[in-house]
Length: 242
Image 1 (cartoon, rainbow, N blue to C red):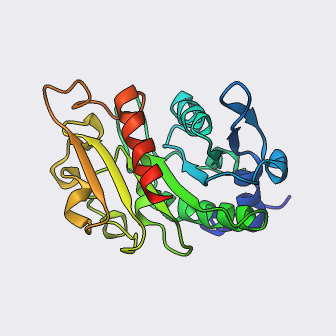
Image 2: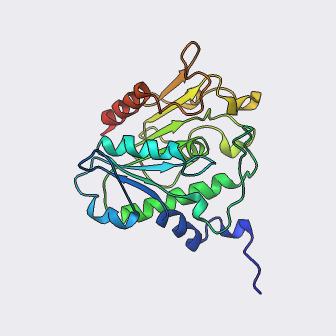
């Protein structure tokens, strides 16, 4: 009997990364505004699209937050691809949403960054359309810190860019890549002092940080883009970049 590979060995394993891409959640623009598909459908849907939104889900996986994002972007005319980190054969727990409690698997960030790089390579084999990197929560940390391929813009939701671990801190986007950051001032995931703040302190003149403060009802929410006004803000930001 062969022992299962150690977690560290599977982080960038080609087979494991292929699982995350092949299991991706896909939404494409359609006659009804947004249609769900698979990565196998992408080859015939990547012509004449303004951009591809590569979306990184949070630590809970492809839950309704990801589906809502997919519908929003596809209805706006973008192709939406969200790799499934939980499609890996070995996936350590990185959070407990009921707490909420995060930081249970520090190395998860490098895992998620590897998933981004792999997905970009697969998308680039099909199209040269601009790629927007977006993410929520753990996916937002990934979007904020990813390096390795040019992007047209980044959308970071539910992250402060502040942390106790140095590799989690700040923004890796170069000046040529505009960033939109969205966070509630009292997001319950960021109660620890080391996690407080917002990405604005790491931004250049091409970027925008939006912090929802009281009495805005989003001031204590982790998911803000379910709000119609926030959706309009995101889509306007992206239109300005394309």
